[in-house]
Length: 282
Image: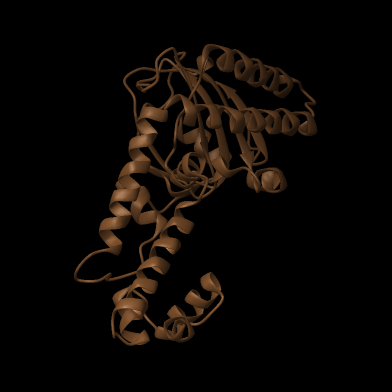
């Protein structure tokens, strides 16, 4: 996987006849019956918003439509293996056009091709916006500003729909949260100590979710980010060791996975307002 595809080269890779523009392109999948159905991991350098149906994705939520939205960002690696062509739309946008809009959109940083399962009403709303975008793009002198406005509106609706998905999948995600608490507790209370500081990435991989999706999920259901949960757990373990053991500050630092005691001291002071030594003396 040496090649990184821009918009024109990726469309050519998909067997889709597009233009040479690396700014923005919009396609209607229904018009491309020879689209590539299988691909090894492939890296892209643009934003891709794809609204698809008739594809082999099983929704864990009842009463969903047969449509799904996927969003990928520059730098993402995607792969697929489909049995049949699918229908829907896709918007390919150069990252420069969305840099200001996308920075505050958390789901835009999902890096595991997380599917947004759509209700029938959500499907109708997004299909309307995608189809209007496509009609504008088909004009000889289309407005780039109008297309970006449609794309921004799609992103706004998508943010709302992802939040709805968290609630709709609450039974599934409550287990993810419970597993996170259990796994974090096991790591922090390992009798042999912590080899390295636990990361959000570690727990996200355990849940088979992208780091940012996992972070949004945990914060949605607990009100606290997973990183803050990890930090709070480390601080509690550190306090217990400072109170109830004779281990030196350096020994405690190493037992918690810190490479340098000075880093632990700085971390502890940031979280508590005082140094480990002062905490122990108090």
